[in-house]
Length: 56
View 1: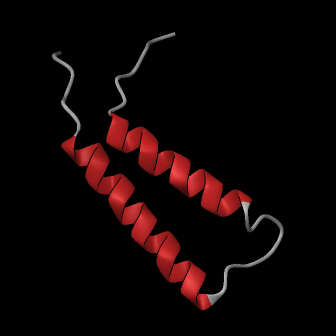
View 2: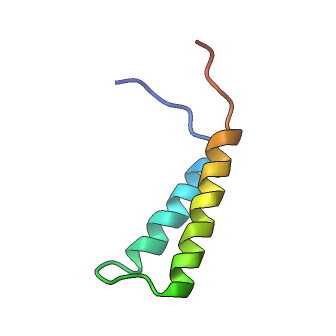
View 3: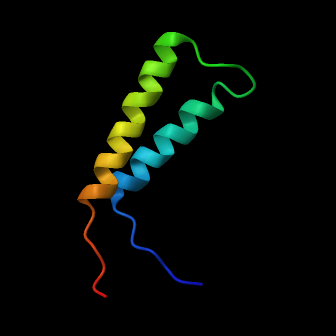
């Protein structure tokens, strides 16, 4: 299995998303929660784009 390099920022953003969703498991998100979730996704996507690329 290949090992991937995950930056601290990416791992932190992913953990925040997981914790956020785990706290709300089993019910739909309220509108304010949906907005917060979307902000977390933006932070995660930014962290993914900013991580160093592995040499091919």
